[in-house]
Image (cartoon, rainbow, N blue to C red):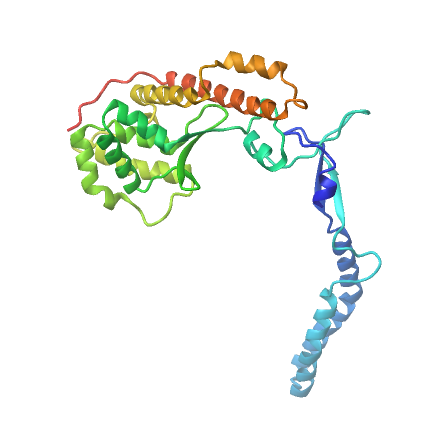
Length: 325
């Protein structure tokens, strides 16, 4: 199937065709077989009923012996000229005008994956992401506090059952195309900004807060963080209502931290600006300067995402600091 599907170029969210293995010949012939054998199965059922009514043990034994072969014949896979288990079906999912190129899709993936697997990139790919290494976050925290402070806060974050994405012994966080930071990164920043006495309190109960089940989705992570909030922001006399935990992760301090981390991440691109890279990309040939072109596509996309991250973080409302008791 792959060689035929690869005859068509990929276009993210703009494909005209899908390819799939065709099971029509199997299902049609099986239905024909069922129709041909339906009378036999009916005879067997009626024979069993008659035998039960007559309570003839010998005939019942014979009917039971015959029944499996009858059922087996009715479900046997047909063979013949019309059957081919490698049939391929091309399904049209979008209209194409005469003369237009017809596109396939290789899946919903960002430019980094497309370049790694297929050797090309797309401008403005909505599935692009930016990775921010945990070491970059730790470095920012160390510069604001100390290396020992950063190590202790990250250790508690891990102890509570949180982690980022992992690849080849590296841990990182994903920033979506829209600039939305990974939830685990926000929780880490929340723990970093805890007051010392609250941090110490959380350390004492950390093992009790870790559940037996892994965190499979965002809701699991939010539910887990709610337990942390109950410790770090205890209700007074049981009257205070537990706040929206996601709003706690959108504080002014966390937003400021995200902006600083985004600046540190973008500094890895050197002294050139986003505008410089966009101009280079505009004049770069995707054929004659293939490597440079794809590199610029990745850089421009990632820098735009970092810009959205800053804008996203700056949009969070300013909150008053609360004294922890």
